Length: 343
Image (tube, rainbow, N blue to C red; front, side, top):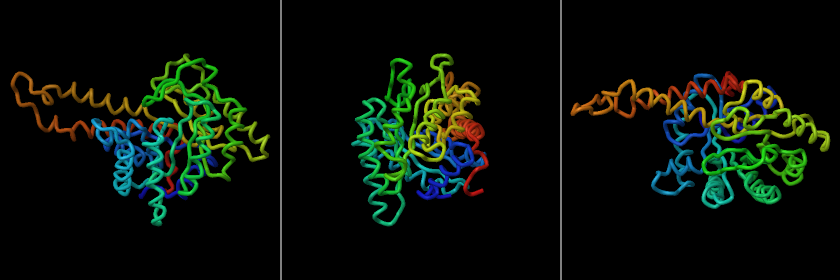
């Protein structure tokens, strides 16, 4: 299916919230990892979100140059073409853009989408994340207020991070006290006061409840998904809305229990980022292949090796299928399996 239109993306998120499931959002950095996501989503009958970070976009452009906007556009064009061959709907998203990358990542991509929309076409990306977690909340929200109308004008969605996710992802690193890893109701109220509840443009909020990027160390930080309900209830009471007024995003979920994920989804999470686990699934399968085919992939003791085994397509297919299995596990864990718009 073609990449989701803005209307289809909105329907995806609305359906997830109404039915109590969430869409997995997979970080990719190559055509192989992108194809693995499409394979896994198709095999599980799930729609989903495919996203790229600044580092992933740099890699798409070529690791010897720094041209992340170019890389992101190349990713989007490739995804737009290959997605047509798969019977699921996917949205494209840019993930974790810090302040120092706005000018060479998100802003040029918004400008490119503005040209598409002027020509009567859809935006290139259906949503963009502004990661203001490294700056004071007031500045975070001021920048979000500048970006939100730009995205509304191209019918795209903003993602903001209100709070701090521990650990590191593509150079965005946070260390500090555990208290900083928990968004407060007052933080969420400040976000709503600045950004509204949809009337200024649609946005998703990554509220933090002890999340940590990367390999999760059990017991290091305690996840408190009940905090999301406290914040949603507090906002609903203050603004007189229905339950769960915010569309929430779950970052740093590696190592979380099924119960923790289910509770977060029940409290309004509609998007959960998946990166560390799929990276490992992809690379672990390659390592296994190389060990199992040692004599074939290396020219040992003057031998010629086995071209059929060291052909990158041979081990690439293995890696893509292994990652696709982990993609499918995510869709079942979040409840999006079998919930495709095309079903």
